[in-house]
Image (cartoon, rainbow, N blue to C red; front, side):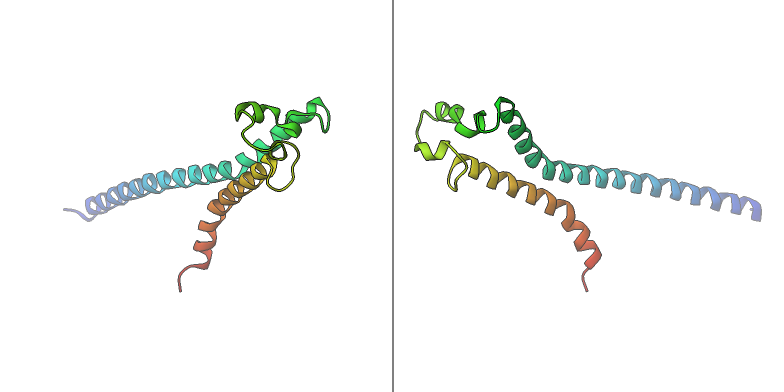
Length: 125
């Protein structure tokens, strides 16, 4: 075999290896971007949902929306809880529990987004 033929075969082999590597890393890159988008969505969704409900409730006027009385929840639970659970936003009320849970879900989503980057940047020594 001539040296030109060997060089051409080597170049073809390298091109094939590069193409395979690009396909693999490209697929991993798409998966990483999808995972990042998923964690961002999981972090933003609870906070955005809480904000949207707050805005919709205020259409009736501040202090007069469905979030302030939670009459819908009282009907849904057949008034199973004390009146203080439904009205207002004092600690122990439905509104306080909803805010605590959405804040924790948002926190978990943000940690799920940031932690892999922190782990990578700190590395294991």
